[in-house]
Image (cartoon, rainbow, N blue to C red; front, side):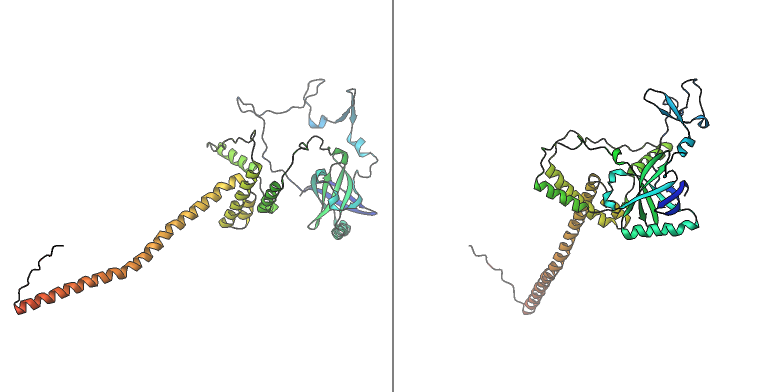
Length: 352
């Protein structure tokens, strides 16, 4: 990985040569501005407002605009000669518990790599000291023309640095919270707790950017001349909902989705099912339960028919045996009558 800054960590009297490497990357799909009539690219040209001529990057410098509108030129040499110890040094100023850092201050993340063989020993010393103390280091450093605040912590066997916003850069949340007159009932809190327990936890590695994947599929479909699928717009605003009913439905849907995810498979698919939106998962669970019920209904009559058939078979055999016996008896009587020459006398019907 390419380094974006070379300097040193100042750890008391210990100096650790390091290289700064970006720990994150942006996978968002980027678009270009085009002319709608002919599809041509729309570009930005840097033009001097005094003479109207286009200028190259080599002809562009820095300048500070004063309150009266005048611009004061500032060169890189001017910035490099500032009497700041953090110009080429990450200066550790304190070690504090990680909980004392407000997540609102978190900015970009970097990896710090030991720069050269002599830096391996002090680098490892600082890393192990951070591990054993279970604290993070607060430091100052200069990058891209300004002094910044950073937090050093250990990730696996590497020292990582998170850029921090200065405390005065965090805005107070005035006027953001809802009115204080809103009250929440205990039953609503219980349902919210039940929903949180049902959704459970998730492995962060299983989360993915569904929007980016959908955009990539859209681009591929249009490039192939296909008509992309379009989702129906949802009416999400302006409705007054029953909070308790919504929470109860959410809990049921989450339970069905979790049960459905466990049946479909384990591993990554099951983990992803935990974080799928409730609206997407509910129909899937309903279909599975309906299909299971249909299968059970179809199987049950078959079993009953088999059992009934087994019971009726002996009865049929007995009836057949009786008929056979009756035929044999009649045959014997006929033979006896012929031998004796006796005539059969018809019986008279007696009136009721």
